Amino acid sequence: MTDKTATQAAGLCQSLHLFASAVVILFVLTLPVPAQTKVDETDLLNFFAGQGCAIGPSTREAAIVTGFKPEAIDEFAETMRADDATI
Image (tube, rainbow, N blue to C red):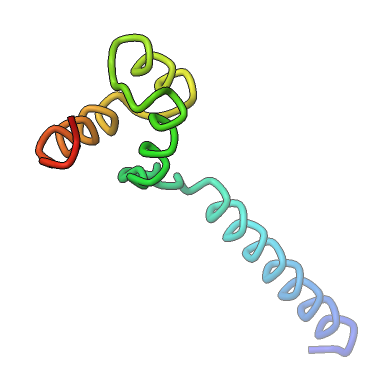
C-alpha cells in the first residue's frame, strides 16, 4: 500500500465514521418522546381553584382547551369526590 492509498483509506474511514455518527444522531432525534401520562395534581388543583373550585361541564371544557387530558380531569375529579374535606 502506498502512502497515497493509505491516506485515501484513512480519509474514507473518517468519512464513514462521520456518516455513521450523523445517522445515529438523526435516528435519536426521530425517536418518539413519551407523552406526559400523569398530570401533576397541583396543576389541576390550581386550574380549578382559578375557576371557582368547581368541576362542571364548562370548567371541564375550559381545562381541556387549556391542555389537560379528559382522563386526567376525570381522575382528579374522582380523587376530589373521595376526599371528605371537599364538597
